[in-house]
Structure formats: structure tokens, C-alpha cells
Length: 415
Image (tube, rainbow, N blue to C red; front, side, top):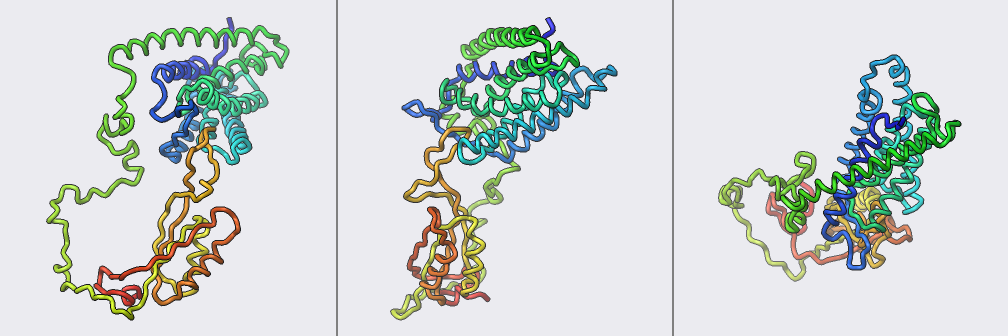
């Protein structure tokens, strides 16, 4: 009938999206995904850096998928059109990425990184059907449409239909696969197919594209429903609740994380050693020192704890050094104050409790006046806006330098 799907927007990606839709529906949502009121809760992604790497690998390999692999470039016509296929593939992906970044920025107040990754794949999926049949303008419009569609589709399945799709497979592959195939019926220029609606070809080719999409959806839905039902009735589809909470990396594979070698792992150098072998007594290095009782007129040591924005840390360090503070401990922390932070969104779903990134700076003061430290910190950190931070002041009983055994004032001085 002339149905055109050059490299599989329908036959590959939409088939996968339909399978994901039915599978996710039969499987049910993750534990804790929906509250008692039915509203979705944001479950944050595990590692966006690894996700970015995966997206760029796919984007690069799509040139082989669309331009080089389908029919092996074994004819002069295909070799001549290869440049167009490569160009259209990259253009659609780039436009979809840009559109989604701007759309989520306007919609949620900041660009959604995870959704933008999905958009790159959505543009690639959408152009796969007609990358050889449309011109660059058509490819750009297909990418633009997919950029909007993936955001709206993710929100629709998550909030309206209430199908839990953690990575957006239904929207990226199912929705954008079908959309790209149908849009080919509008933008085909007649290079390798009939002309589309916008190029004087009438509605026949568009009708064939729509019929192809509908027939593949029907066939896939029937077959995959039978397959998933058989699996569910025999070995089961879903992990136990305990395994789901623990994580299948641990329960199925005995690994703390799927990212072993890429994420920070606990130090296990002494895991197999006996406790007696790794315990080091002070007596082995030097004679034990008695902790001196504090005299009534002993100097006072004060701990000043400063919670501030990460961006303010460098200015704070410089200011502290200028007044004679040469030692501090800096910790990356998360938290919020009485305002509960700013509302944040992940893949279009509001995050219930927003923990904002902060730094905690701990300083023990003995010589420099505490009031000077507080006033200096305030002058550096103050902007007048919510989130400037807090300063806490504590009394310190004593200070002991581990290496030398020095105590009190001497332990706070540099060698």
C-alpha cells in the first residue's frame, strides 16, 4: 500500500512503546509512587550523569541506525541520499532537545534535565520513519513536535492515566514513534515516497501512514497482552515488595549498586581483617596523656557553625582567612528552613519536600573574638533573600590534637 517507515519509528520504537504501556499497566506503579489522594509523587532518578552518557551514545549510534544499517547503502540512490538522512536525523534530535529545554523552563521555572534527555531520544525516534523522505524543514518541524509531545505525554500518563513509566518509554518510543510516522504523511517531498499533504500529494499517503500505525498498535497490543499474561500466570511479572524496596541490584545480584566502579563505594579494605588486627592503641605510638581537668579560668573555646549557599563558600573562606581563621571543616549538606524551600519539579511532578543543597562550615574559635567571626560571616553571606543561611554558636569543652596529644589552645594552633 506504500506505507513508509524507513528505519523503524513504528516497527521498532512504537512497538516497544506499546509493549511498555501494556506491561506497565499490568505491572502496576512502584511502591510509593501515588499517594492516597491519587496524586503522583516524584521518585528522583538515580544517576543523571550516567543517563547523559547513555543519551549521547544513542544519539551517536543513531547515525548508523538510520543512515547506514537499514539497507546497507547498496545502491547509488541510497548513497546519494545518505547525507540528507544524517542531516535530518541530527536536526530533529537537536530541535526536540532545545524545544523541551525551553518548554520545561517556562512551565516549571527551570529546565528539566531528565525530560530534556528524553527529548533528544524523542526527536531521534520521530525522524526515523521519514528521515529519507522529508527535507530539513520537515525534519525540524518533526523534531519540534516531538519536543512538545514528549513533555505532554509524560504528564498525561503519569497524572491522568496513572501509569507509572519511570523512564518515559511510552512517551518517547510509543507516542513519538507514532507521531513521526504520521507526520511523514504531511512532510514527505516525494524523494522516496508519495508526496505528503503539504507538498501536493493529497491525503492518500497520510491515510496509509495512519492505517499502518493503527494496524501495528492492534497487532502488538494483542500479542504482548497474551505474552505478559502467560508470564504473570507462570513465573510472575513483579518482584516481591521487600526486594523492590531493597533494590534488585542487591537481592538479585548481591551488589550494593548497579554503578559499582562509577559511584563512591564504602571502603572495604579492612573488611576481612580481625578487629584486633586493625585497632591501633595510642600506647603503641607514644605514652598516654592524661586529659587535664579544666581550670576555672581556662580559655573558652567556641564552635561557630555556618549554614550557607554553596556559591558563597569561597567568599566566606577568604573573609575568614583575613580575620585570622586558618582552620575550618566544610560539609556538603541538604536542608530547608521554615519556608520549606522553593517548589521543584522532576519530570513535571512536584517534589513534596524540597531539600536544597547547602554547605556547613564548622569553625572552632579560641583567639579571634566570636562576635567578629559572626559579624564577618553575616557581612559576606547577607543578600536579603530567603536562603542566606543560619549561624549557630556552641560552647566546646576541650580540643585534643590526635597526632601530638596537645590539648586546648595549643591544639588549635598550626605547627
